[in-house]
Every structure is written in C-alpha cells, then in structure tokens.
Length: 183
Image (cartoon, rainbow, N blue to C red):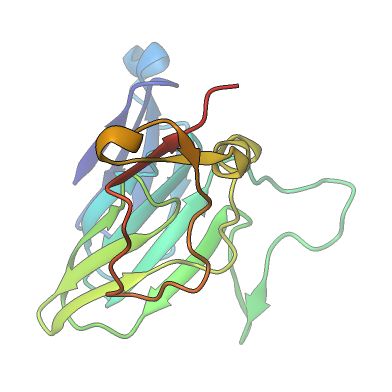
C-alpha cells in the first residue's frame, strides 16, 4: 500500500511485514526511508494521508487495528518518558491513536471535508469514527468561526443565519446552502 503527499513531498508505504515507512521524494536516491515504524503485527492493508494535516496519516492492518500517526511528534531528549508503555510494550511518540473492533480491515480513509472523521471497511462492516484526541487546527477553527449567511432563492446573500444548534441527524433545515459571509 502506498499514499503520496504533494506538500511536503512524502510517500507513506505499508508492507506485508507489518512495517510502515516514510519516504522523502527529495532524498529518494538515497534508497532509505526517513522514518520506519513497526507497531502492527499483521500486513498493512491501507495507508492514507490526512487531507488537512501534512504530518498525519492512518494505516490499517490485518491485525484488526487502525493506527493514526503524527510525524510532528518527536521524542524530547530533555524528558525522561519516551512514549506510552502498557504491559511492558513501549509505543513510539508518533503513534497518535489506535482503533480496534473490526475483523479483517481492508481500508481506512479520512473524510475530505469533515476534519479528522474517518471511515474504515472490513469483512464485518464499516466504521465511521472521529478520534477524540484529533483537535481542529487553528486554520480550521478560523474557517468554522466565520459568520455564515443563508443562500436560498431570492434572498440569497441578504440574510445572515447561524447553523441551527438544535438540529439533529436526519433533521432537514430550510437553508439550501451555507457559505462564509463576506466582510
């Protein structure tokens, strides 16, 4: 499995030996990965970069787990702890989130518009989930905090409207589309 990232010029690969490697296209002639992770115990079945966070990617494995990694997280030489440890197993600091509970996971994908929402497919169905520790970035918060105006019919662009906080899943609203208001 392979996934490319345009900026920066990184490629993430997952292999049958359960390892995940990060390659830099600018240093591709060196024939060595810039990072190598060995967390999973089964072959990697899918990898994908986060659509909005350049340093975050997800990997699905035949060991029935999905891992989310953040390359921006590093060991701090001034701090004694080097990563989480459970049952004498130490986890790398770049390991950001683990999802389990499906059998024979085949794919993992990030939603292109909803920050950090993920979808996974497996032999026993699919999961839609959002890791609670994946917070919005400052840029995403800025976009979401902009006032919205309702655009429908003749009143398009004339009335400002905030999203309905009481609406629940499956509830229809009168607005046909929402767009950021222009200052």
